[in-house]
Amino acid sequence: AAQVMGDMGLINGTMAVTNMSGAGGGKAYAHVVTKRGDDENLIVAASMATAARLGQNVYSGFKASDVRWVGALGADYGAIAVHKDSQFKTLGDLITAMKDNPRRTAIVGGSSAGGWDHLKVLILADKAGISDLKAINYISFDNGGTAMLEILSKRADAFTGDISELVEYEKKGNIRILAILAPDRIPAVPSAKTAKEQGYDVIGANWRGFYVPKNISNARYNEWVDIVTKVANSSQWADLSAKNGLAPFKSFGKDFENFVGGQIGKVAQISTDLGFMK
Image 1 (cartoon, rainbow, N blue to C red):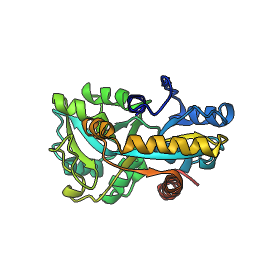
Image 2 (spheres, rainbow, N blue to C red):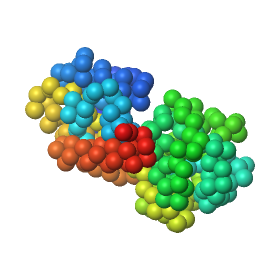
Image 3 (tube, one colour):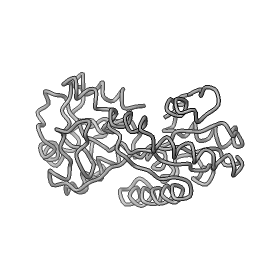
Image 4 (cartoon, one colour):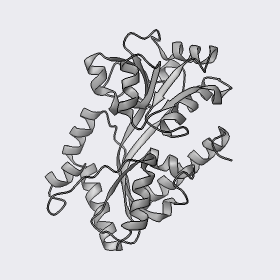
């Protein structure tokens, strides 16, 4: 998105992109709130994973209202994948194994326990009638790439993540995508069936968007909303999204702020129901 902003002439000069990892986005969130609260030239990438952590009160006292939510310009739907040589040929095969012995089936993902990658598996398992969700053997890694190495080296049974993380591996024939958690099939991987097609009506949309520091001027906030809106509606972004498996998903300004608030509430409810929050 930063490249498209530059290519379209929507920002002055060049945009420096910094990847501040740690605490599932919590380190970056805390940095923005406490150190960069009035920086009018700062915009931060966020996703459903950010909302999930806020919904679970993981960001040590920080709230959604500590920043201003700009907009979303795509959604990366969840997916479950296995090694190409895996004994699991279908989503049903994996679900059966999880029902028979949930602790024996190792599922890896790039979010911490209770994070969005983990929640997707639990929501799917719950839908499939697996009662002991706490017994599911989820192993967390710092990111999806590290988790995928466990699949490629056959050290784990299944991967939970987003479709954009899997497109290249699928094209190379390294993995088999058992299911995508989307309402419809994704053009980037047309052969991959949805969970819904296979009898499990589960949607796991990881929206991709942005927030900015809380204390910037309203005028500057509106400029950022305008920039993100223009990127989302551009042909350049449409092409880039299609290549990377991102589905169209647009929400901006106040509508987006309300949407994020609703998502945070949903995660809080799910996490409470599944025993991750008291």
